Image (cartoon, rainbow, N blue to C red; front, side, top):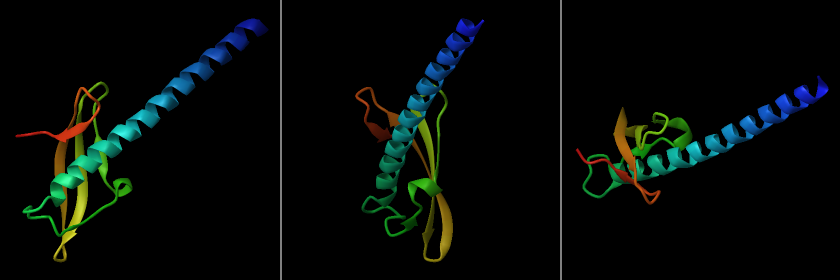
Length: 102
């Protein structure tokens, strides 16, 4: 009976480590999506180029499991007005990110 319990505990530990690794990878992808969208919002000539944008921690990035598109919502303030910059970032095959074109 003790052997079965040890095997179950070991299996649970392995599953936990895999899940933690996936979470770390997920945050890496979320940050990359945020970064590419923020750069797009701040690009020269943009209506929002002079806005103050929220940090990554205060923004929302969402994707579906296995999805290569990330929906990014970045709060901003411009001339005393608050708004939300919305962007979709595509994860490219080489691991880089780019802003999805309409």
